[in-house]
Length: 273
Length: 311
Image (cartoon, rainbow over all chains, first blue to last red; front, side, top):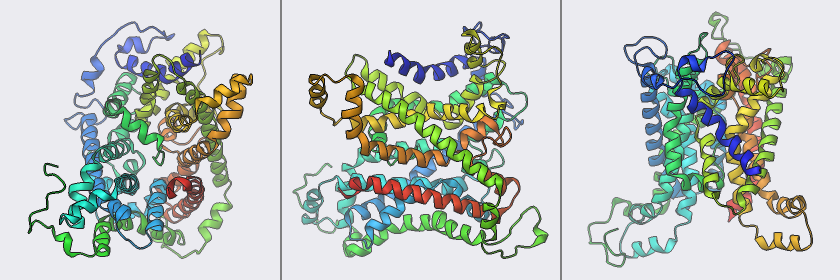
């Protein structure tokens, strides 16, 4: 009984979303509405990739442009955060850095701060540097939450690697940094993968920074494109739900494939909700 | 690793890091992160505080930017709109985290039991969790649509509603349906946190309680809740931090924090003042007030988490 309630609560809304993407306009907008669709079509999936499907005519589907921007920003954020964050995490986990504990707590606290805490000065900074409406600005802004996240989570993974392995390598003549690259890093590879996944998903989902810092499809991401589309007076519901569904497909597929990572990561907490 | 650990590295293969002392190496490895975080978090926090001491209105640049000290803060505290947005934020946070906790506990207890298809049932949680926040807004906007939405259709058929309801134009219902939409997406997160806390509780404790004739509710009340207490506190603190900053779903479902400001939570109020009316100084003051509240919540969270940090 409870299981049925749980499954219905969890799956019916998203099932309804999918069902709405494959219906004809007439079936979607029947009055009075029906629960059973009357006509199926894949039109929405074709139309959304057609030029001018999603707002102004730029000769290319704005939805495609937004998806491209989302991909570039998410990948850029993930690569930079992993590169910088992993180095810092190792230093926190293994090396004698003064005020380590305090610094690590500051890192965790800054991961939990909301965008609104820093967005006004960042806006002024980006305006001054002519970075507004660029992907670079979004990548920089996203590192406010993704970089501390990587440092925090990876420091935990490094701490779980037995010191003896690195010490053995050092006895064999490896430098400290060499032991990090050749011993510690390969050992935390699964953790690195899980962290990359969460960083990617968080960046893909981000909305507030992108809303404030972008103004054209040079940098608008998929969430901004969707929010803009819903704000129009005559909403094309078929296209809108299809856009919402397609934009969610990458995180859905990745999360299902890497289900174990997601569950253990979320269960460990410390992850922005 | 293609080479056994015991074989010595050939001389000359030592990386340049070998020359650094541990401290130097540590500082070098921290440097890129420290620089980025100082640039995008440290400097903005300080700069935001400095800005909050001035009257800055980008819409009227000819007015100059006079120093007003704590004037912006005092102005905020005297605004009924500010207090109303705080009240709406607290309402959202309590409603959302409370409902999440109730559902999360129910679902976690359910999923902690052994039954066929348990893994499948757990995987189902991924769907709401992984859906984009904005797509979740789109989904609920569509389901709540007064004319074509499935929620009105269902409630009309069941006889719960006599006439279609415009959920998102009603000052009472809008916030409540937004809470529902938010909870739907965030409950998996809560469930997984609680489930992780339930798993180490030994089954023998439940069996012993059964021997004593405890009912399901008594077992839940007397075994589960006390043992789960630390996990519940951490999960609630974490989700409170998440709920207090809510913006995206409200933006997508209402566009302006309406109707009649009933969903204008504090982030939305801040967004309005800074990026709609362009009161940057006042906006910075509000954002500092939010930051202070968040830091307080974060400190509480870290204190609850501390046993984990020290181990």
